[in-house]
Length: 53
Length: 451
Image (cartoon, rainbow over the protein chains, first blue to last red):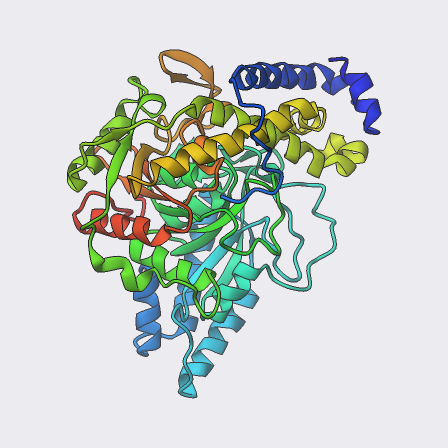
């Protein structure tokens, strides 16, 4: 992900001093998300945008 | 006087000691200990003395001063306290408008006669498990000052463990009550998602955040929980506390929750299971993915909650949280949406499990308190970043809003460690019964730390 382009889409400018750290966090998040999304979730499972236990 | 909350309330209500005397002693202890432990970010001596005097006035007039009469307490500094800024561990909120009203939980405790003594340190905006705050310093563990108190409610746990006050308030999104309760060797309650009011609490990740208490006994935890539920209390836990554990179906969480290298955590779970006569093991399916989903959802909700401030004031965030909030704001919707859909699936699996079990036992943390500044811990034989992995056993549980009581297990010559008693939604009373049983049997205890 080009973090500067993505940030611009939401009105955010990431200071060059923080870009390496932000990239590192996003790389970690991406690895976690990839592991999550490997799960064969049935297509009819709906999201829980308003969470009720 | 370092009594438990109900012992203090009993002494005050029966006139053995005045609320002013209790409050004066608590303020003196805070004054003596806070320099070394860094639990409080604000001490409200004037307000506390006024509240104590009001309790004493009620007693003098023959009025009911409330079930927690004269009990000193304090709150994580993300709870609104009228007249002081709600820092939430940050610098950027130090200049925010001062609330005119206390958070609901503080109002509830004041209404029960408890006396607010101050606000407590935390990880900035609750994004952490260590309470090493770059603006306000690290909170030190009262059992070993070279170690962290855990987080993000570290000040709340350490203040109770050190005997400064018998009750505190914290919040738990992914483990922020259970982790510091484990590291500081005290009791903590993370209630069912949605059961207690969050009004006046500065949120972190709104689909995960819960608010709850810390105490040094199961009985105190039940008493304060009843008060926090509001008046009239929908379900009193204190009255059910000593029913015993007969009829409760219990099991140990296996698989993901059994890291062979987590020796002390496994010993603690074993001691609890042995005392309760539990030999059944159950598996929570896809717990690792539940944790992954919680991680992604937290990052996104947290980052977006802060978007406006990140646009203008990112440089004033704690370096320990800044990059994570910025990255969280950029998380693609596809990840979050999948995480929320997975959450529905996982919740149904957990519901199914609770058809045949009432209480599940699991470690609260993979290790006892880590050192201040320690960057890694060993999980399943692999060296991992400490900050991201201290919550491995707590995140898959709060992900679907389950209530948990953390009970402290002490071992001679070792640091304390906590065990999670996990229940189905709205089953806090059962968990508190088990906690009381373990305390009564001498398995769980929270003596004031000898620091």
